[in-house]
Length: 343
Image (cartoon, rainbow, N blue to C red; front, side, top):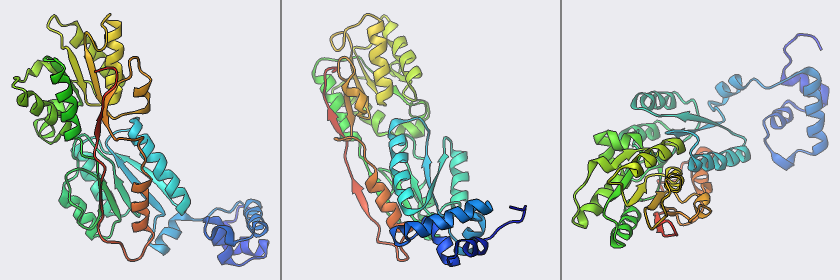
């Protein structure tokens, strides 16, 4: 065909259908209500003409982007990967796309708030984070502006948006109590960069908070030299654990703020010729499926079952797809301590 820019009217004329039918087919609407033969005629006509919908124009007409946003602290984290997969599945079913924004600093958080106010998406999920990036008032203002929102957070209140909580502190305290009552006295904390190095982040972290409270509860002083960063990825976790275990006054247990770094600590201990849990016990946070296949299986703190975020997706799209938003909802799924062979 020529270099002319073809429209939906041209596709409709070639396919012998209405413009509305072309719109339904090209946007994935109406599902099985359009016969497969009709759908194929429309798609064939569109291919012949080289036609594709003008998404920008559609968004302006509808005042919709047909996108939802996932706001995360980092990528490559198994729990975030699963959240993204579940949101993608829900978005596909609703005919929406999913964009991901990585917010690793206060500056990026502020920029993200601005972009969400500008409606780069029709709704958003704020993923769980080791460091609280968004103030409650930021989320309230977004909701008041009409943005459908689900916050996965243990602190903010549901004011115009939904909140999904996964309280960690009690389960982390149970894990520390287990280590301490089984005779461990030099317990290292392998934490994320900010919760170890930033006083404000440390004060907000449930994991390090439970660690410090347990030491105090059992009458032990805090040894700051045993609080090190390394929970952000596997390599950092291995190196930090190896450094700890080379010390002449090495710890007799490691409480790791992520499952990935705990698994790396198991490898570091084995490479150092140490026996788990006799020489050093290891506990991680996250309860990833692979924690069950380490040798020995890893004791963890985390959700009682495999992470499933279909409920988060349902909450978001119930807000996105309805004209009258539902009242605020709050769901709480506490973490539990799962003792296994490593502690």
